[in-house]
Amino acid sequence: MSDNAALSFPIGRRPELTELVEVAPGIHWIRMAIPIPGLEFINLWAIREDDGWTVVDTGTRSSRIQGWWQAIFDGAFEGKPITRVICTHFHPDHVGQAGFLCGRFGAPLWMTLTDWSFGRMLAAEASEAVPDYVVAFYRRIGFGEAALSFLGDRGFNNFARQVEPIPSQFVRIAEGDRLDIGGREWQVIIGRGHSHEHASLYCAEQGVLISGDMVLPKISPHIGVYPAEPDANPLKLFLDSLDSFRHLPAETLVLPSHGDPFVGLHTRLDQLAQHHDVRLTALKAFCTEPRTALDTMPVLFKRQLDMKHTFMAIGEAIAHLHYLVVDGSVEKFASADGVHRYRRTAIRADAA
Ligand SMILES: [Zn+2]
Image 1 (spheres, protein in one colour):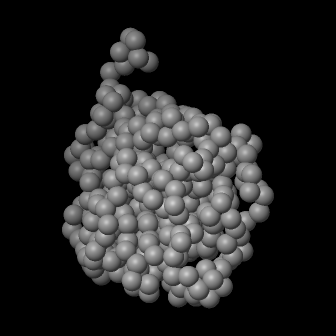
Image 2: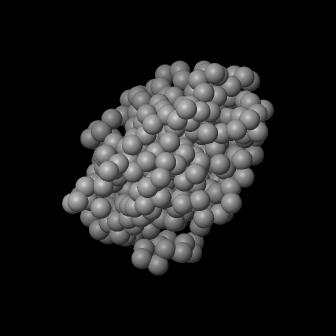
């Protein structure tokens, strides 16, 4: 199934659209197609409760996805209601249908405060016109007029278009919380860097981790810097967060949001850390001369990127550069043209 030979994928099959596949007693895998390039599917989880279902993550906003949900209500859910919606984080493929599901069943939304707030904020800030601070952010990166006009044409409502209105009320979950889901105890493990306060859920009794987007078997979770927090260092937060999963047993069954359920958590944590380490090393070598973030793209991304992907990828490039700025190996400065450049700091004898 998945092509990471160092991991094992014990489930052996994937659910068809609107089908539930039980991956551990009471825990069911739902797989939905989503219109996000490079992802294509999201995994959602339905955990059987005495009186209905707890659903973890929801899919992006679309009538097609609502149709699939309806088919699940009519079929696999056996007439039982959704009694709770948990969203691991605020990204549209996770929170996009929360408003629909919560509204349909009068079910509460459980999320972390930061991600619930940030999603609500992005939706509220949506506008046709791109705000000046956003244009200035991309100008400092070095984007020319063609790219800025692409940005202008796209508008500033990409997030809002992909989510049903996020419920106005929520139940807060936070690091270390122990939740009763399906009659078993699940522990909340917070991860940062991919989103601000991402909640993974771990059930020791069943040896199952719902990892969300923090640990994926095949792709490396997106780590980006965005205009709202231009000096962010999300890669440091992400790499530190990987350590929050190292105490879990090696045989843990990991249920990721993208890709297939797998065993081999520690191997995958090592692979992810190494993936970024390789890129950081390459960037350091490349920045012996002043470079813009755009200059670094071919170092990080081997294939040619179109404009849309360039805007996603540039955030990832800056995340790597900021990591190096904060750890002191690269300095960031504004050139006369106002564009930020990055240059290797003087190499110490002990740290080449
Ligand atoms: Zn995500």
